[in-house]
Length: 156
Image 1: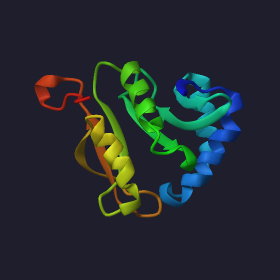
Image 2: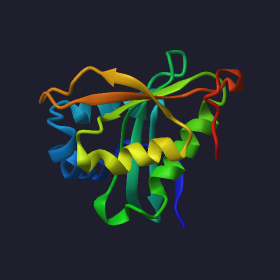
Image 3: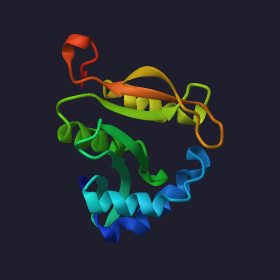
Image 4: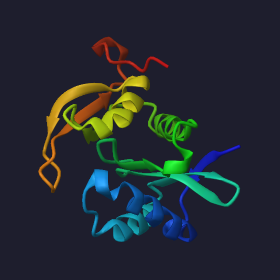
């Protein structure tokens, strides 16, 4: 059984292994260690674990900033087991009020279909294009609106 918890400094090496797996799709992440360590220090880094294995992870904005998922990935061998959904559910529980945004791969990136499907299955809706990634690939912004009057309420 896996669960989500706040990341600890002992998680960094396993986190970096996952980041190396996704780098061909995400693009270069030269400062990922610093981002992870900063997220751990401020309590905005979450990990999905099973026993001592880190299955997936995400970096979030500060709680006092606009709510955003800045980075989310699941280890290749643990995909399609509900790990990404578990992370998203933990984020939704953390931020039960207000919008949550995430920038992910545009529809012209076939390898990003699973990420878009994950977002959409949790009620995120496309909010249009986002700035391109460093490698020039297109990105789009998804938003989960907590306000049901805006017609963008979570559907799960």
